[in-house]
Length: 95
Image 1 (cartoon, one colour):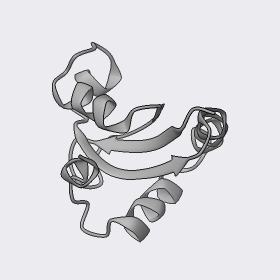
Image 2 (cartoon, rainbow, N blue to C red; image 1 turned 30 degrees about the vertical axis):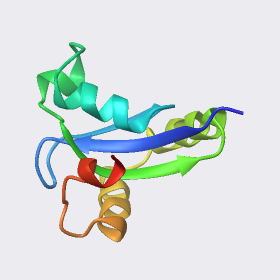
Image 3 (tube, rainbow, N blue to C red; image 1 turned 180 degrees about the vertical axis):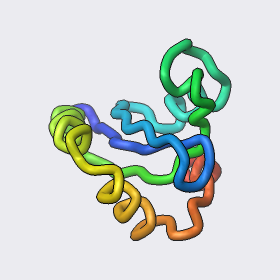
Image 4 (cartoon, helix red, strand yellow; image 1 turned 90 degrees about the vertical axis):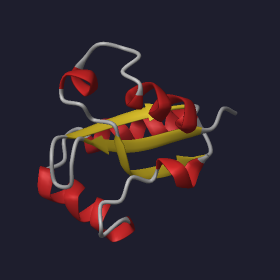
């Protein structure tokens, strides 16, 4: 069983939201912060980790991500604010 993480990064509080999934959260957020790959998060400077969820199995994380991709923006904001009401960058807390 491979662990998985579902996460949301943004460029600023209540800014652009990007939902992703990974098996190594610390590494993946480091990649976002250092613009390692060109793409959506690089173009919109989504480097702030504002929400994450641990899954015991990567397939569970992928399934949940597919569900959340269809969510309304307001639902994602509510989810973030339940865990992180100040929209702090949580990267330091996962290291």
